[in-house]
Length: 445
Figure 1 (cartoon, one colour):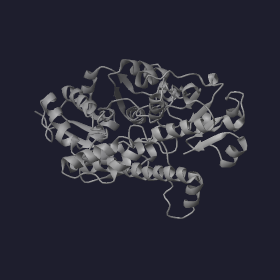
Figure 2 (cartoon, rainbow, N blue to C red; figure 1 turned 180 degrees about the vertical axis):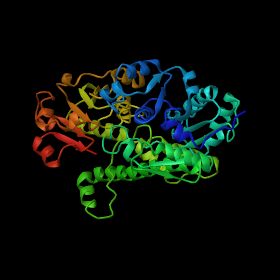
Figure 3 (cartoon, rainbow, N blue to C red; figure 1 turned 90 degrees about the horizontal axis):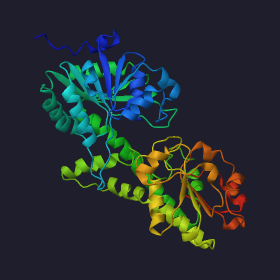
Figure 4 (spheres, one colour; figure 1 turned 90 degrees about the vertical axis):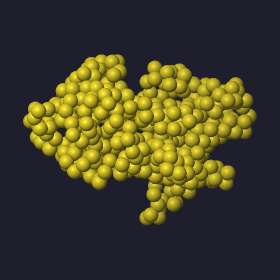
């Protein structure tokens, strides 16, 4: 049997002698596959045949690289898992959500490991990008890979971890210009993994000493953001009770050189709203109960209900009966200018309103109506159908909403006195002087 080579994998990829594969072609995996395909041969695997057909047809449902780029990419898109046996460098980029009880749901990464394992050949390096708590890659994924493949880790194949840092919808901080954390199970694999990622990461890679450290980096960086936003959300709730404008308070605070610039808001999505639970879960297994992280999560998870309650209060003060009022919510994605609806906290606003038998109508030019219906039971309406409103809640700062003049917003209300038009600007899209001049009854977070 010939000796297995790992250290020259970079050269073999560059010269087209070996292939790289992506397992998972969503908001993270697909941009990685497309970028690598500019330099090496790439197989893009996803079990969702509909998604594969979209990519092959030149359609990018994630809007991360766009239809034109997808239609020209050389990525070999497939739903045939056996094609993974053609690759010697396999990147796993599948979602890692939480369950209803907020415990980590490792089923996607476990299933991906089974798929990779039963199709892996000797000499392969497998790199996980999925967000997990420290220990998952080595304690859970390696045994699955070994069992399915019959191969021995460290001898027949090697593994590494490089947490994804893609920010969906962000056209400034993109894959290639965000510094990337890389790690391997040993010095050899770490060096190869770094060299291969350096092919596409213009900002450079940042090697760490071991896989657990790399896993921790990801959950810690998002937990830090979550805690900071939770503090801003508490400030917003306090300012609301004080009757002062949160945005003005923060603008004043941010004049100081060491202010951090965070703002209050709905914290959803597949990272910040999820990753802290991965960190606290492993901490509790080790006997430590989080004092700050979980409380920050509690605050942020309550914001949807807080916004809904504010809407009800404003409608009552305007002399309206909330149950019979016509309410529109602008946006259901978890962030602006992005079609991703995963873990959207806008749904928490909808749920809270439904507790009072209030059924709002939702419009979102970015969201896929089919996905919104499947995930949340929400029937999206076209933006042009928004009319005769009693209350409008702008929950997501899409550019279409941001570019809408305040006088156009007023036209969407019923013919009634301005001070009876209830307008909630959750994202502070409008200046205070604009809102005051509109004459509407307004509220913002």
